[in-house]
Length: 404
Image (cartoon, rainbow, N blue to C red; front, top):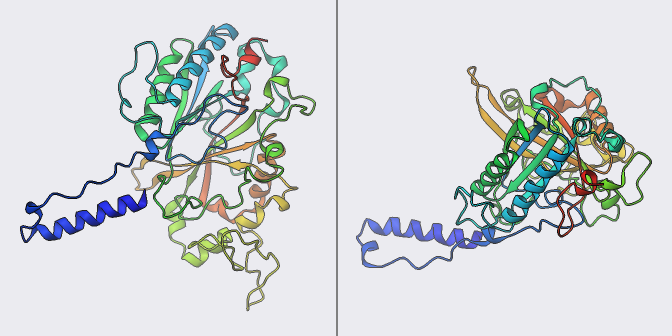
C-alpha cells in the first residue's frame, strides 16, 4: 500500500513540476493500482469469541451504551439482540442493512474489517429478571481517587463497540444498530474514536496516543501461552461465573481526558521520565529497543534511577501488580475545543480480561496511588461490561443467557 501511495505521490509531483513546461498536457499519467486492500478485508461474525477483541486496532471506532426502555424486559432484550446480531452479521460481510432500510452510506465501501461487539452491564440483569445469572466479576468497579466520573456517560444496560478501517462503514453500522433498537432501548451515551490508518507506516508499529507516546508495548499477545486464560473466561470457570460466559471476556471502558496543554509544557526529557520510555521509539530509558526489558535498578551518573520510581511504565508492569494483565485496545478521541481553548481530547480506554478484579482493578489501584502520569489525565467516565462468547451458526449473541 505504501509503495503504491508513494508512487502515486511521486507521479503527482512530477506532473506538477512538468506542468510549467506544458509537458503534462502532452501525456497521460500512468495508471495507478487502486488501494482496495483495506476495504475488502472481512472479519467473521461467528466464532468462539466475539470479534473486536483480538482483531487488530481499527482506524475508526464508536462506543455506545443503551438502556432498555421502561417496561422492556427479557423478551424485548432477546428480540433486540437477535436483530442486532443479524445486522452485525450482514454488515461485517459487506452487505447492506436488512429489511430494505439501508440508507446507502457504505454501498461501495466493502466490509473494511468491520467488527461489532456486544456486552451487558450490571443493570441489565435486574431489568430482565436475570439477577441470579449475573457474573460475580460484573460487580461495580471500586472508586478511585483520581476519578471525576460523569454518571450520564458511564455504565449502561447494553454496550456496543464498533470498529472499522473506514469511517463511513463504522458510522453506517452505528446508524443501523441505533435504528434496530427501535422502541426497545434508547442511547445512554455514545463516544467516537480513531487510530492511525492501516498502511500509514512502512511496517506495523505500536500506535501512539495523543501525547505522542508509543502506547501498548507490553500488551499480551495471542501467541503468549497464557493469553487465553488471561483474556477469556474458561469453560471451567471459578465459582460465580455462569456457563453462558464461557469464551467471553470483560471490558472496562474509561474516557480518559488528557490535559494536553499541561503535558506539552514539559520538555521531551521530562515527558520521558513521566512515562519511563523514550518518546522517539518507545524504548525504556535504560536503553535498547521498544521490546527490550527495562533495567529497573539502573542508575544514571547522578545516582538517580534512570526510570523514576513513579514512572508510568514501572508502576503499570504486570510483575509490579501480582501478574495482573489486560489486553488494551483503545481509541483516541477529540471532541472539540472549549471556550478556554483547551482541547477535549484523550483516550477511550478499552481493556479486556477474564476477570476485571484480577486485571484492571489491581493495576488501576497501583496507578491511583502514585503514577506520575496522573497529573496529566482525568478519568471522566467508566463502565464495566460482560461480553459473552461468540455466537454459533444460527444463533445470536447472548442467546445462551436470554433463552436458557
